[in-house]
Image (tube, rainbow, N blue to C red; front, side, top):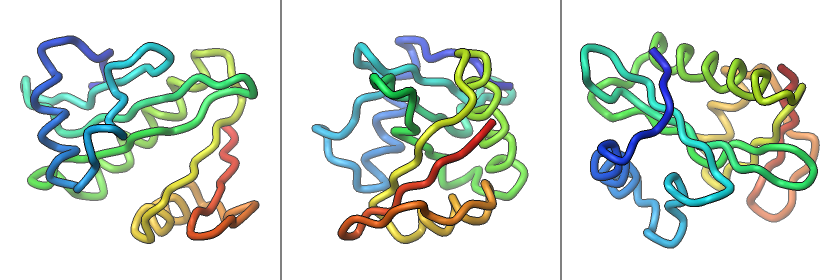
Length: 129
């Protein structure tokens, strides 16, 4: 089940990002201008994603599945949650711009997209919902 972020989720989400090597300055899941949604099952947080609001639309800022819950089923459920959330916000697309190679592979595999631009090490994906 996908639900909105609550303050009680802060420590667990922060720990997930720390385990993935995301520095504190890049952790924006609880800031204004960002909406975070939790994938939860049996009161356990399996993963989350964060949407960043920008002038041009929205972009995917964080997408993380807890290491002990990483599998295709949870990844697809979280991806489906991203698409539904963006659509419910009134947008018909969003941008993904990962910095890590494994996130590039994930974007290509789950969203079936190729980058529309590559600048330095960062690829940009335009995903329609």
